[in-house]
Amino acid sequence: MSGALLTDNPRKSRIATAVFFFVSGFGFSSWASRIPTIQQNLHLSEGKLGAVLFALPAGLMCTLPVTGYLLRRFSSRHIMFTGAVLFNIMLCLVGFAQQTWQLVLVLFFFGSSRNLFNISANAQSIGVQKLYDRSIIATFHGIWSVAGFAAAAVGSLVVSFSVHPSWHFLTVAIILTSLCTFFFRDTVNQRPQPHERLQKTTIRIPDKALLKLGFICFASMACEGTMYDWSAIYLKKAVHASKEMATAGYAVYMVAMMFGRFTGDKLANRIGVKAMLKYSGLFIMAGLLLAAALPYTVTTALGFMMTGFGVSCVVPMVFSMAGRIKHMSGGPAIAGVSTIGYFGFLIVPPTVGFIAEQFNLRWSIALIALFGALITWLVSELKEN
Image 1 (tube, rainbow, N blue to C red):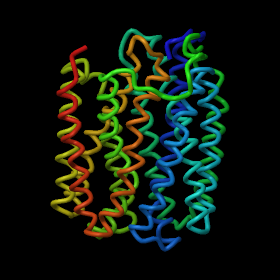
Image 2 (cartoon, helix red, strand yellow; image 1 turned 30 degrees about the vertical axis):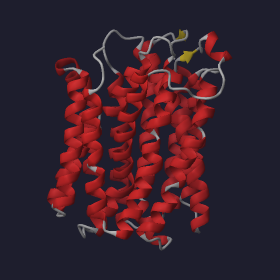
Image 3 (cartoon, rainbow, N blue to C red; image 1 turned 180 degrees about the horizontal axis):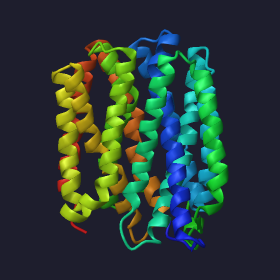
């Protein structure tokens, strides 16, 4: 958002926002690391799991208009804190789901709270970016990836000790909520612009440039969502890796994404955002095709690593570009791009399960690789800023 930014200490605000990104990444990756266990506990086939996973992005999409409405009327810091608390509560409840319908219901609200949390956190990151004269926004997403890697490592550890997801998620939720409560005081108090408070609740895509950014976001989020939901399962079912190796393969992806995001600002300054996004699409395509063509532990891990590098900076840079739209505040602009982008989470990961049911997981991953090519093509169609 580009409204008034009230803060006494930019450094403290940057740290506080980074903590909320850490909470988001750790919470979501904790869930992702235990998907194979939950699938086994509830006796779900790939097709049934795909249908169940559909509930999470469905909940996310249903709250997009609500999030846009709230960001035009209230400070993103309050929306972010509320979303974070709800997110942690839903994470805890996921672990206690004993039947498939219970898991579907909780995942729907898990997705809803995640949307409220993530969009407002990205609005906060744009607010903090305005306090600095150099690019720092990709590092927030790097913190998200650090958290994801840490959560994947913890997930691998608790799996080896056969810890039930309920105890795992309950512990994580308590710790993450405590962090949010402590650091909330240092977040940026963003005031929505007066003219935005009068807008209708419908999210609108104002021009073709933002529309293209939305489709780039769609393609990247489709690949990210597939990796979160299916990377561990692919290693277990298609590569026949052990449970520990399957979780470790997801960790490899997260490490690559983390490294890419911490180097993203520097690369963007050196070769330009468009060039970096083009190469990102090529890395995604090559990595997923490698994993699909050669389903062995080493080659699949290498392919997932390339995919992690590829997707690492696409969404942060797209959100940053959307936040610079002159006639819109950052929050509503991000909500507009996300309206398109999150359809990648809504449609694609569940579709992987349906394709795998009819053919196999290798075909599913190979088809997802086409989104990398789509990113490269769409970036070439963007006009220079």
